[in-house]
Image (cartoon, rainbow, N blue to C red; front, side, top):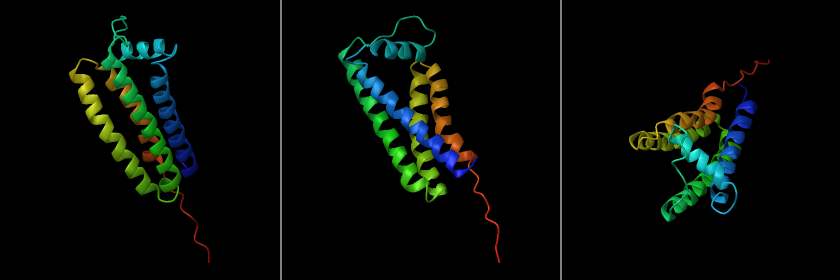
Length: 145
């Protein structure tokens, strides 16, 4: 994977993270609520209609989670633009450290409360960031005389 392709993939993943976070927040005051409730039902697989945004605590956790996703996506966009573009090894290490710091406790906690399918969804999200970083290979410049 080239540096440009990896950077574009990371920015796309960061943008997707921001949009998902904004969607979570907007779901609290818009018809997007149905989509967020479907997502909550999905992470508690099987789809059975048992999960809903039906308490003040659920609402505030959705707002906090959405805000954190917006912040995380924005941060990764900035790291990709300002660090990864100049020093891919350092930028990639920073991004992977942050993503793993999210992935491990989120997945562990989800599994422990019976939302095992969220681990699957988390793994897809992890891959959106890890794959471009791990597949990037610098192009060796030919030596000129």
